[in-house]
Length: 217
Length: 80
Image (tube, rainbow over all chains, first blue to last red):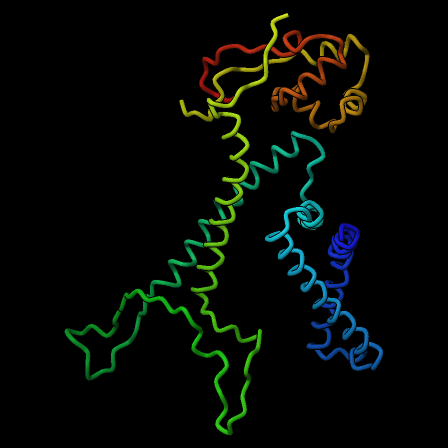
């Protein structure tokens, strides 16, 4: 299993340039560039798209391992670190990454909370019809707060009875729910790892624990 | 003063020891398995090494930690 994980970790890194090729191909196809109509180009883009799907499937597989099996954590972390450009060649670089991660955590959390706020509060400025103008005031402003958990536009059945049963492209979660989910994940994963990392210190600080004998000689 | 603010100012004489040994920053970095940037940062007072790295430095330079690193009370209230 460890060998497979090593291979998958390498695949995660080396497949990235092919994704860029795939994105470029998709863009050229969209722009209707003549050579993209060739059969060979279509087959090539098809292969790249399958590679793209496989890559995400591997990511999901690795994340599941990360959650349920700590033994494979290091390989996945190494792959993600390489993709993210994280360098920890010695303790000073590790300390720099620590402080950067602290900043990134706080700034991302702030941004998520801000987006949640923007999605929860609605401010609408409108124009009144001429017959409803009061004291010459033609504009109206309304401020409200509301939370939509589900996306209403997702998977509507067609009139003839056919319809999409499930589509990942039409996730029933609203924008607010997605941001709330990411915020909760961000916070809880941080608290979980801080607790885990702090556990070692707790044992060290335990006054009942017998410490190593210290000789003065 | 917050709990996270350093209360002691750590200075070092690493460059003196390195000059005495006639070794470059690169050679010292290789010998104790760190990057040259770390040696530069320690000598410049921008980074305080861990206790383990301080011991590794002292061992390699055949001296004790106190000869390389000194701690004095911080009076300026600044980090450096």
